[in-house]
Each structure stands twice: as C-alpha cells, then as structure tokens.
Image (cartoon, rainbow, N blue to C red; front, side, top):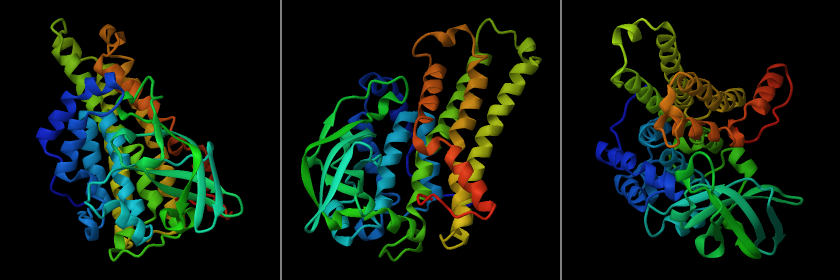
Length: 376
C-alpha cells in the first residue's frame, strides 16, 4: 500500500475537532470547516485535472476521510460524500461538467439517490422532475444536488440540479451524525432537467466516460459505497483513544489493577484489531483494483461491495465493546464516547451499510447465478 502526502493539515484537523460540539448543536457543518477543506484541496481530490482537480487515487482520498473522522465523524461523513460526487460528475457529459466546474474546482454537490419520493417523466430534450429526497448531507453548503429517480420505461437515472431549482427543508433532528446537516431536498413544481445533466445507472455500471485517466474506468459505485462507512473507521480510532485515555487518566484508577484487568485488555485488543482489519481490507481492495488498471472483474466488484457493507456492523460491535465498559460517566449526554456510539450506530441506517442483499448476491453468483446488483 503506497503512501501520500497529507492533504488536510493538522491545523485543519484541530479546527474540525474544535467545531465538533458546535456542529452537533447546530445540526450542520460550520462554514469555517467547509472553507478550510476547500482551501486545502480535499473537495477536489477525485476531480479530473481538466477542471483543476488533483486526481488523487481513491486510497489517498479515503485515508484523508479517515483522518478527518478522527477529528469529527459528521464532518468526514458529509464532506466525504460531497467530495466523492466529483467522481460521478466526471463520468457525465462534458457539458454538465463544465456547468458545475467551469467557474472553479470547488463547486460543491450534495445528493440523495433514493428515488422513492421522486416523480420523473420523459419529455422533449430531457425530463420533468419533482419530489422529496431525504438525507442530503452537507446540502446547506452546496450549489448543486444529484437526485435519483426512476423513469417509466427508461429506468434509474441521477439528475444534476442547480441550487436555484430546489428547496432545502430543515428536517435533520436526529440522535447521531447531527453535524452532517442531512436535510431534505424538495421540488414541489416539476422542473425541466436536460438530458445532458443526467447519468444513467447502467452507464455507471458499465463505466462509461470520456476521461483520459484510467482511474475513471473504476465503477463509480466502488467509490460511493466506501464513502458512507469509511468515516466510521476513523471514528472508531477516536473512540479507542478516548476509552484508553479515560481508563488511564482517571484519578481514582489503580493502574496496577488496570494492568491486570483482563477484560479491559481484551476489549482494547478487539477494537484495535477491528480498526486495523477494516482499513487493511479497504486499502487492499483498492490496491487490487489499481493493479487491474481500475477494471476489476464483476465477481471482484460484488465481493468488494459486500465487504464495504460490513464495515458499520463491525464498527458497531467494536464501539459496543468499548462503551459497555466505559464507566458511569459515559451515560451522561454529550459524553464524547456516547456521541461516537450514536454516530456509528446511525450510519447503519444507510442502505449501503446493510449487508443482507449484498451477501445473498455474492453467494448466489458464486453458485452460478446471475448478478442482481448494478451498483457495484
């Protein structure tokens, strides 16, 4: 696994950590944090050089997302999702890319891909779109949104919509990941979306694009399914540090007794192993994809999708192991370990973090059945 020069400085990480409580209270990200991440280049790590991006490898991008998550999981979740959209837009028409990035590489895009509340219909030159979409993380700071919809007779597409054509409704009153500001996006009166500002699901599956870099031959799904769970790895590292600090930093703790507390030792060891395992599997997968010139087989894509979906369940087991032995102070609201416990558990609600369907697809394909997942 190769290394990279950090993009996000320690000064910015300290800023993010200092804003964590404020963001949780305000239920959205601090403009100061977003601006700092713009200035350091985090949002353009996966953007093509053609538009002023740095075209970092996914390994470097996810390493930075984990570092941010050690400072604050909400920031890593929301900003990671916003940043990864540069990869998807790079697969769309050049006209769409120019509309978004023509004035600079730091245009920010939120998303909500769930088509349940959407109504999309074909019309001359494009589509008419309306509806409501939830969990649009970081939307307050974005000038565009990628919204999912199913068109009768045509299938699933993602629609790229400018900020002037949708309303953000403040609905994000939740028990974890409060700082992500994952509010609803609402379009009441149908709007026209030109064909060039849409992305067919099957084009994403077949890796259709016009970029020069081979990195964009990688399925768009392989980046997105990781961005919604990688923050939990960094958050788990943070939780482990808090747990150890509270164990050794308590004035009433008898260090001789603690050193001999087998249960505490085992809980720490299991959590340490989980963070190492989750990070190693992810990086190994991307290294394998890079070695294949970013063209893994369908079977590999199915496996990697399943392995990504396991991250949150494994992180939950690890944070539970720590929280169960965190002591009486941890039950009080806003205890840092309790906040991380909530954040990691809430991440499980994202559909990409539910392994059931992905495990069945992996097993059935191994037994000779056809692949049933086109977001791999």
